[in-house]
Image (cartoon, rainbow, N blue to C red; front, side, top):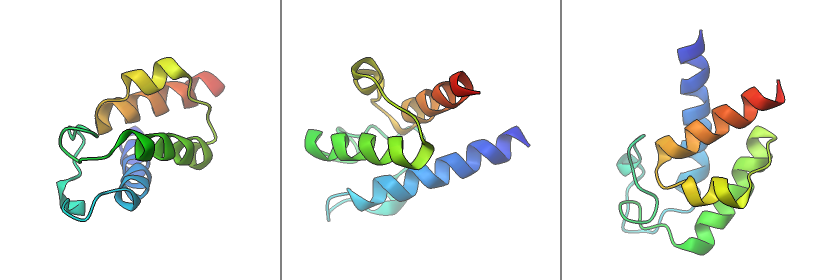
Length: 88
């Protein structure tokens, strides 16, 4: 059951990320190990938008430290998991 939950969070995060991908990056390029800036070519302004959308979608609040640690899709998922667990 836990894996299913992680998978749905990953899909939700993927849906958010794909909105901000530049035209030269395919949605298929998004994987859990994708680096937002280096691999997905997401600029810092769009990264802030992703953070705001993640906060809304998952009903969490991300601090500046969280944003600094959010380098890859996997990092983002880890932070989301932690924030949701902390709220429970």
